[in-house]
Image (tube, rainbow, N blue to C red; front, side):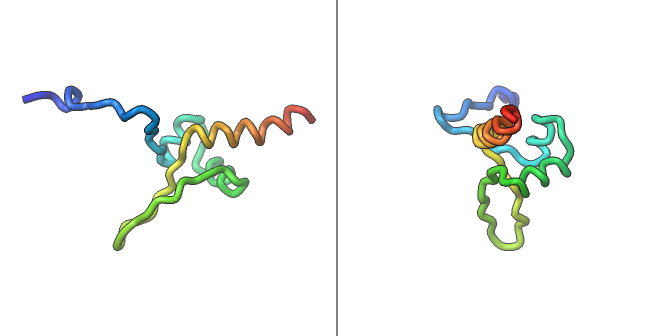
Length: 79
């Protein structure tokens, strides 16, 4: 029987997984409080549909988040 790691397949070209909030916190090395402040400041959040009693979780496109950070950091760097 093949191992679980042997069944792993690459994502199709152009398809990027969305990050959860804990994954985004880990990527940037920040707390949940910091991510919540970023969301309030306009950081892009991907809408997720839920059905029934499922809880809605935030998802983040890392490329959009990086672009948002670059756009918000550039004016501060020029000041």
